[in-house]
Length: 273
Length: 339
Image 1 (cartoon, rainbow over the protein chains, first blue to last red):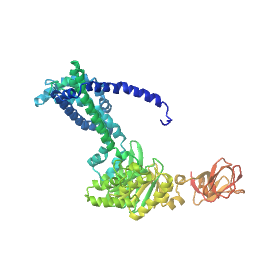
Image 2: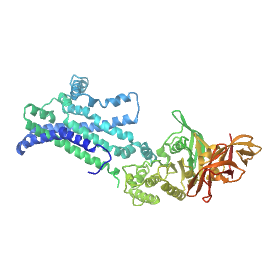
Image 3: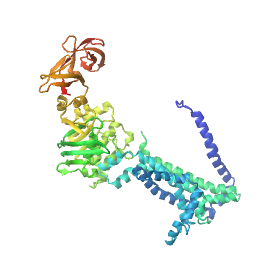
Image 4: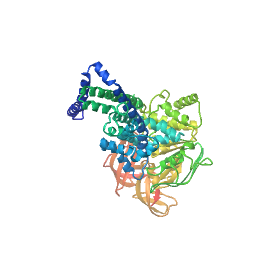
């Protein structure tokens, strides 16, 4: 190892690696081990059962929908919070973190109360023929709620550091506001947006507490994968639970790897030669 | 394009950045706005560009009142102090940006040809594919200039164009900017706090202080005939001596100089280091040498006058002076300003 002027490398590296090993790697390894103890045929039968497949579909589609919604809404919120100062700015800024601070079960119960057919929102929507609680739409709303801060908080600092002279330069060259946003600002925000998207999507895939109250949890239609894992655990079928969970794990990994790759592509311009 | 500023005023919150500035810039002229920080020079430049709106007064481009025309329609090329190149675009894409977003549609091939021409003009052939992070500061500066020129601006505006570069690069770029200006003949205004840069480069130097124009003229005008103590001090090193004017002559601790048409009374005498000399005998200002600084082109002598005033002057490299020597500081020429 090269000599390093900064002190404390051995100790800090040792402690953090040990910690990461115990808290992150060991449980994941146990999960993989448990799932692997099934044997390929049983494993495949469990993870490709119609009920499991239905749960993947509803989970992934709702997570995608929630992430896309948050991509736009989160960007808009970050934009408003960095660009403008208005009365109550501080409160709105603090509220963004609320989904992090609030126990997800509390969020789930409140959302359910609001969106059931006799709740404040639900009754109005029901008149319009839209049913939210106990449908995939409800799942999506719960996911939106819990994963909103990721995109706002990853984009906000980048937007704040953006040199105003870049926009001024683009204006002096004749660019319209929309062109400047599309060709100058958005490309510079892309890496942060991707980071926010990957975190938001991963969080939505694994969200449990906020969703189970509003989802209705009907197998084949509104049962999310995390709940299916929970049900298998309740039945003491640890192997099946691990098998289904491993699918979630792989999906999250693939998603993170994909966005990392896209991020490094989007950041090519920062590489010096 | 001729530019005319008429009683222009700009206030930020409570700070009056520009107070009643009127200025005319001839077509094809290269003008420097020179002043210390806070003098309003950058604000004036940004108002000419349309990056700030004037609170009062008018700005004319030719005969057209441009005061309220937004920057994107004003037809100016602006070079920012820190270049403001788009970091995610290559050098060529940066230069092409203005042509691509313009309302005047251009053929793709025509844009490419123009980018190549501009790269040649700023001597960056072959660097079109690099990103701004991959080129040096001086190269970035030239890309910024090429980008500003790409939209055929009527006026070229540069904010501290060489401020962030080291001395050697700055020197080369200065000469090169002068050449480009001669080649293109475009009306150009640049802002600087560096006197040497302004004097070397500009046809006309406009000196600003506290949002006012203090003096303007060619480099020769402002150097030979500074009209205030501020201009004298701001343009370069100057010795200051308390003086008294009596009957058309200024007297300052043992030295005297003719001043015509000045009323009697207290005054200050300003002399450049090269305006003073040293001699072993009087008459002159009695002084003793405290230090001698050797420089490539001569010797700078620091001396203390008997009155306690500190003096600095330059002598030829051959003069064998040393700290502790006593003698007289003589006056070749000086400017006297009434207090």
